Image 1 (cartoon, rainbow, N blue to C red):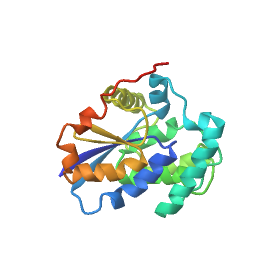
Image 2 (image 1 turned 180 degrees about the vertical axis):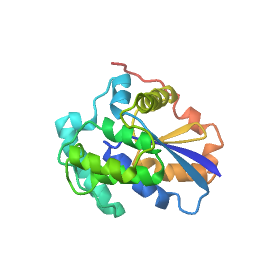
Image 3 (image 1 turned 135 degrees about the horizontal axis):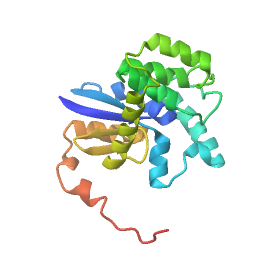
Length: 207
């Protein structure tokens, strides 16, 4: 049985869609998943990037695309009342509750179903009560664990979410799920030198 690491931030609609799609995309294969929350903003800061929602035309396109993708894959979705929002309380809650699939699903759906404010204090309190975390989401141990996750993600070369890791290889994005399936099935492409060679071309222009 192969072990996958699913790196995510609840702020990302693509992470939500990939989370919902993963069981169908990998149906019939033998695997287990470790869910690792990370702060997407920390990845962006490290690599000197802005998030899609921070560039207005890109934000508008992103949400049109996301809603079309959700329609295509049959996943309900409602953009939260405010986006972007501060995902830290939700990431810490998931970490404190033990980020298994049940916990991660509850938090993703808190954000991406209903169109409410993901940061609303009353809604967040209800979610905390529902998940009953074993640790204090605002405790130092949980905060440090989330920082450690994000730093580890950077060390591994993550630049965005969702990213699924398999045998040290990183598969970024919702549209990488078919590629991930091929790798899990032992696709011949992954046995040769192509994986490494495809990434070695040097850029002609550097800004």
